[in-house]
Amino acid sequence: MVADIEIGFGKSGRRAYGLDEITIVPARRTRDPDDVDISWEIDAYRRPLPLLASAMDSVVSPDVAEMIGRLGGIGVLNIEGLWTRYEDPTPAFEAIRNAPVENATACLQEVYAPPVNPELIGERVRQIREHSTLVSAAVTPQRATELLGQLASAEVDLLVIQGTVVTAEHKSRTRKPLNLKKVVRELPIPVVVGGCASYEAGLHLMRTGASGVLVGVGPGAACTSRGVLGIGVPQATAIADVRAARMRHLDETGVYVNIIADGGMATGGDIAKAVACGADAVMLGSPLAAAFEAPGGGYHWGMATPHAALPRGARVHVGRRAPLEEILLGPAREADGRSNLFGALATTMAASGYATLKELQKADVMVAPSIASEGKGLQHQQGVGMGR
Image (cartoon, rainbow, N blue to C red):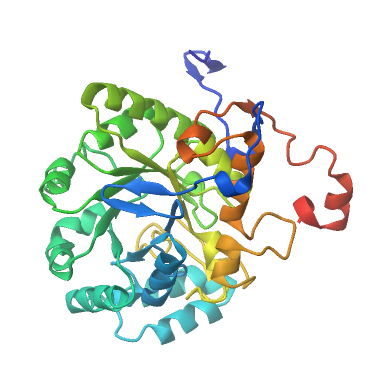
């Protein structure tokens, strides 16, 4: 057990770590990169890349979802986003991109004010289905019951029920809460639920019967939950804690539940460290929002950014750096780790001696807060490589 640190009389807490504070320790052997397998499985689906593209309007459009599927990942469409509020969301995207910084949040609230059009849900799913064999969509717990009928009719293959914090035991005096366990077990398709960031929350989400659990509360580039709400757990510790919950759940039931690290990753090294902490796959937002094809046009914002009463995100500028395929699979044209993300994952595994993602989950890691700066003075001075 990790000893708590005393914060004050009667209050103590654990020390937790982000992905930028740890490093993977290479093992005693290395492998040929061609012998490395980075594929993963969720329910009946096997995908070449352990990737879900975040259900954010700045990241995934129907066209981008199809493209990510073709490249080997899973593009998750936000069913409560602009694509289901507008027949043609182009003017809404232009308004968000052109809004001055001081008015960006108000602009987002305005363009997200129109209600979701249920008829557009089926239309968007059909658009993706025309060119993809796997269609995934995301809904918030607050709207899940209302929209499940349309999602079922549209024949979505993988459902993501996602919020800032999602638990299996939501309490309310005024509203009938979503029975997450009932929904998950009655749906004929696999369901991913989250976010969570602790052992107990992760374990209870697994017990709903979910095929996957999203881990991450607040680490995303556009998220402000840690400041607005004061909640969150550094991502390396959050993943490791939920991994421990999975081991208990596996011992109890014999059922393996996928852990999907959501947020806090910008480079291939970050992805590798998330897997080493226990993740089976990653959900990426801002790295993909910088693709030429991304609908945000160089800007990125989250699902909770346009909240009418309490926005928990910011519109951030990510630029337009490279084609989507180059960001995911290379070739990289910069040495900063932000392109060829999954080539980097495979190379990490080869250099560390691991042939599969499951093997990489067993890797030794080390707390190393200076890992990004040690010996990199010239890069930081010149703003190149790891100094960017």
